[in-house]
Image 1 (tube, rainbow, N blue to C red):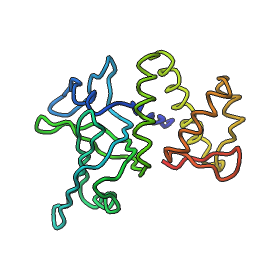
Image 2 (cartoon, rainbow, N blue to C red; image 1 turned 90 degrees about the vertical axis):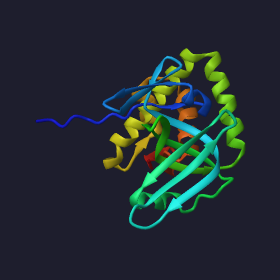
Image 3 (cartoon, rainbow, N blue to C red; image 1 turned 120 degrees about the vertical axis):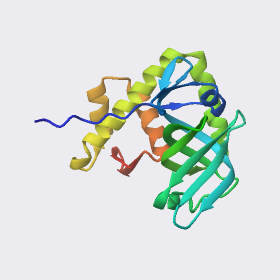
Length: 204
């Protein structure tokens, strides 16, 4: 019996305010997705500043950070030994966070999958990017699909020690400039890395 390939949901780039204004869809108190700007969102890609941090040690380990991008605030929460993921984070840090949306006690919060510290300038870069996406949503959706396909190919080629960028361009049959731009963004986000020029590997 063939194993079904697990496909991650798209990590939507959104403002915190847009997330908080979304409509949660629940099934037996479990969050299925949040309806945001016409999309069913369960994963997000967020850039924001840490305004507060809380760590609870002991038998019931718990950690939370409050994130703010000037449009609103949202918490990211971890439990158990995952509190170690917050150990090097401090109030004032700028983060790029990819994570899952969760819902509990009428609150939307995040479970982090990827956390990367960024320079504060990335807040402005993301704001500009989101403004562009609003002006041309069709183009941004197509680019998002290309990015997800690049990630799928790189992950698929991990047993072969990564993938050549030229092979990705050939396989996707998309403009080389678009693919190279998305590869550059993925390198900046820390999703992939480049062990040698022209070859990329998945980092997570």
